[in-house]
Image (cartoon, rainbow, N blue to C red):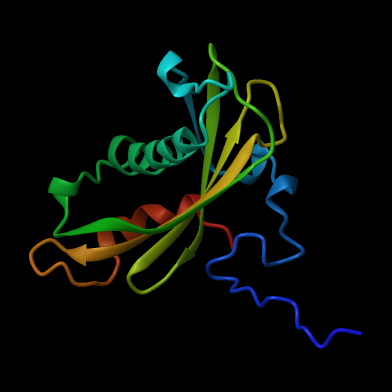
Length: 164
């Protein structure tokens, strides 16, 4: 018998730490915001599928397009900006060019100065995600670059896609 303890996980940083919330179990309907994005030839790598780094670009697009286009919250419109402090991604199916993907977005936690988003990447007509990631922003003052509370303008738009 070994005295080794299993590694400890932090539910704030490990998207797989809760055994009851396997991201592979998420479906399109679990996300409150959806956006279709066309894939580019440049998104693929020599293995013939969309490169893993592109998944992060898609997640960044999902968050910022929702904030900016849907809600008008551009960086110029706020005294504080959300900077990314943590990301993570699980890959469950290959994605290929040509085609498009649907990005699902939801908010899983709103803290004093931070917002944690969850993004699902879906192939057309498929309910199971090809990938699921998390994206956490901390709001900072533009001038001092120090953390500040999530601006009220941002808090007001978070509700419809926040899960509890």
